[in-house]
Amino acid sequence: MGVSPFAGIAFAIALISLLVALYPHTYAPPASPSPPRLFTVQDLAIYNGTDNGLPILLGILGSVFDVTKGKSHYGQGGGYNHFAGRDASRAFISGNFTGDGLTDSLVGLSSTEVKSVVEWRDFYVRTYVFVGKLVGRYYDGEGNPTKYLKGVEAKAARGAQLMEKQKKEEAKIPGCNSKWSQDEGSEVWCDDGYPRLVQRPLEIALTGKMSKRCACYKETDLDQPGLEVYEGCDYLSKACRL
Ligand code: HEM
Ligand SMILES: *[C@@H]1O[C@H](CO)[C@@H](O)[C@H](O)[C@H]1NC(C)=O
Ligand SMILES: *[C@@H]1O[C@H](CO)[C@@H](O)[C@H](O)[C@H]1NC(C)=O
Image (cartoon, rainbow, N blue to C red; front, side, top):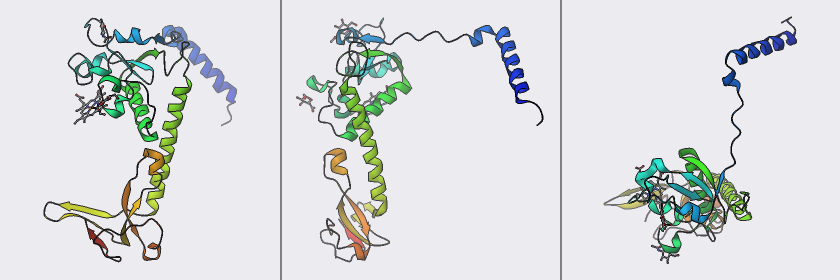
């Protein structure tokens, strides 16, 4: 616009300097963050909600959060009191709050289950205040992530990728319509194509389990392997009662 860009920059610098002079505290650098506190299992156990004078802390994947504002859940008599003062990461999936169910080990869980635990940790990051790290399975004595934490995060990421891929694969073959009523029970049908039961793609890798869905296949695709005709339903029926 004919004005030297340097004039604009110089003006901006002058303006900022003026503001800094007027409101010095606004521009003070933030206090350097203190390193997160490192807890041992015993340190953490004190914050189990028994002592009303102490905050309530919860560990998940080795991250420790202050959940005092959720006292109704995590305090004494709360339904989730067993999460207080410990890392019971596995119980976020198993719902088993007894004995060895209260462990931080995720060994043997599927990638979707591991992903779900990581999502619980995200929930605590969003909802509560992070106060430190638990030294043990997920963080070492210096507060660095262990190979177990890295493994968990990698498995969760893989789970997320597989779920995306599954969604894309399933979108290629539309699912069946379905309805249920007290009198007639359930029924599946296709507006276009024929109902078939088929193993969900990638499901074994995701959950370690078999899981079938109903999908609508065109007549030219009906000879593909792995397609199951519903019991009691004709080869070329558009609707099947279950
Ligand atoms: C694996 C099983 C389960 C786990 C690990 C679990 C975990 C939790 C946790 C940690 C909270 C507290 C969240 C917060 O800090 O605000 C919560 C809240 C809640 N849970 Fe569960 N839960 C499970 C199953 C269930 C089931 C089966 C029901 C109902 C039938 C249920 C109903 C609720 C309700 C209603 C709240 C919210 C209460 C409120 O905000 O006042 N949960 N759950
Ligand atoms: C729960 O915390 C209290 C103190 O806040 C402590 O005396 C008690 O030993 C803790 N319970 C467990 C099982 O660690
Ligand atoms: C909880 O876990 C423990 C230890 O793995 C097991 O012995 C117990 O049967 C489980 N309880 C439930 C209700 O699943």
